[in-house]
Length: 82
Image 1 (cartoon, rainbow, N blue to C red):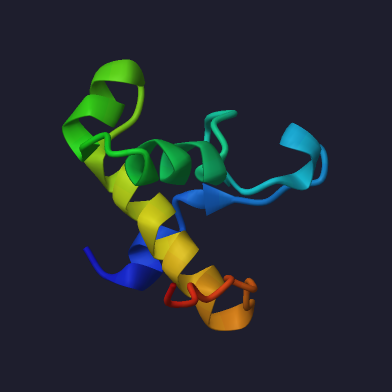
Image 2: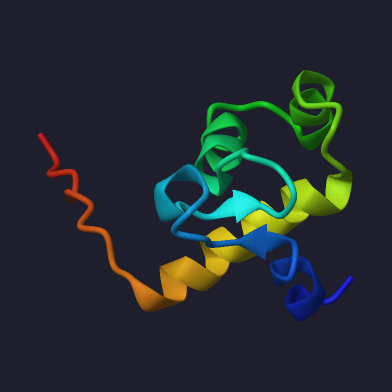
């Protein structure tokens, strides 16, 4: 599935979840899914916890995060050698 098709699975609506990006048709924040993946869960484990989602929904969250990283920079402290 192409990135543009994946991104159609994400919804941003000020009337739903305070306008935070969610998986379309669900009140599950994109950031929640990305946090779960970042903490080490596999896509399959996320789907086990949220059986109402599809693999494409999880991939859409990843695609959305990648798209946002192109637009916004987050300051990350550099490690200094001891």
